[in-house]
Image (tube, rainbow, N blue to C red):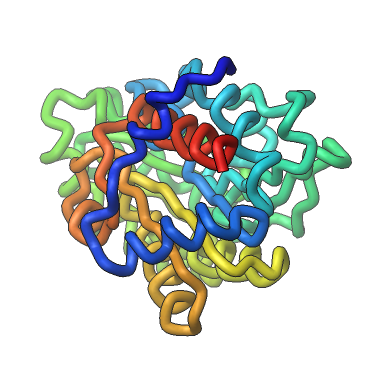
Length: 286
């Protein structure tokens, strides 16, 4: 990426005192900063078919410019780690030699250093739910009407984005899927027109807190776009109370619970990428 002096001016000012303090700390001590970013809806646009999701074209260049100037960078996603690496184009990129991808909400981890994914054994409850889900969709009349099941390895998700009435299908499936998950000792993570069933005890808040402590970070930046990111937002709130400055970015305003808590609200992945590039440029000019 070339040097563009105006990029430094493009860094928006956080709307909260805590956010302004955090940005100042990040700029003052970048090597102490951990940057963690959601993938879908944050680094990649939300698309009707999740298998077609790809990182914004500017994401990898922005991350490659930023990563050498901060302490650490991680992508924290509900997707399998290996899938996020492929869809993001994160492997073998100069500047991202120390990138980590924390998949399945932190249950899996890929590190650029080794190029390998580390993961525990899958939960048997997920297999049981996977077998019963088609019957649940059929029982509420959702089968064959645009709602569909996404296989996520350690989790399974039902999408209603392609249904005739996406919101109605989502609401009709909420209770039966919650009951099915509960019966097999699993939890439901709702998102934008998606219900994901996965094992309890692992969420983005736990994963982010562990990552920040592992990196011994003195400041943290987190960006997300959906309900699953609320746990990470809460973790940043706790870190702040422990004296670690934290900057919260929201990608889009589709999830008000997230946008209301954010220090900086950006319009979507293109704006998130712009923010990361502007921050890299600002740190370059220090």
